[in-house]
Length: 103
Image (cartoon, rainbow, N blue to C red; front, top):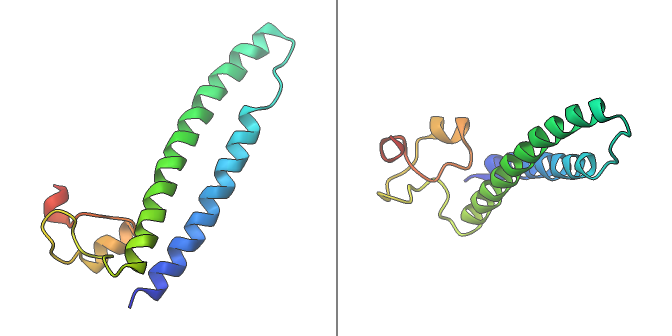
């Protein structure tokens, strides 16, 4: 029933894993010897750390959604047990709550 969602989530998982690898690589790069450059690099590192954290959270949500598809729990609100609308799942494929419970 959710074959297309599963494919979409698997693709999203690949994108997120790739993004995490890139961000991790960028974070582990050497710093410049120039102190003025180091200030900019540290600011960039803050942004990269935030991006890494957000990407890790999204990846966790995607993987949880994939597991819900595999266990036939996908598309069911975790709070009220009602079906999550197709429009909501289109907008947020790893949603765990229906729009009413999310509000």
